[in-house]
Image (tube, rainbow, N blue to C red):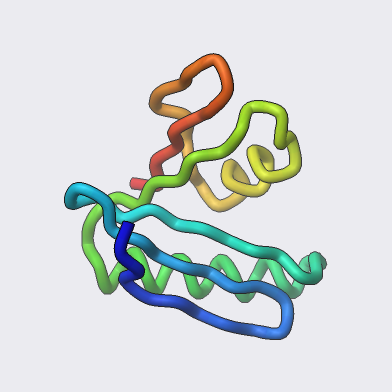
Length: 90
């Protein structure tokens, strides 16, 4: 995957990577709160407006917090394997 762009804050790092023409979102959380959620939501909405294509993420099925987090931002499960969910943000 090639890095398309990164947003660094005190609370999180949001990275977009391109793979086979698709953009994948990776989030590394350092802190979590309602205000962090709101800032991340603004950043994701701005990214969606700029790129104009769906964003994807892969999450291990055992990572409940990450799955809930992705769903809070509007990602939906579109495919799965025994170990991983593929999620899409339209």
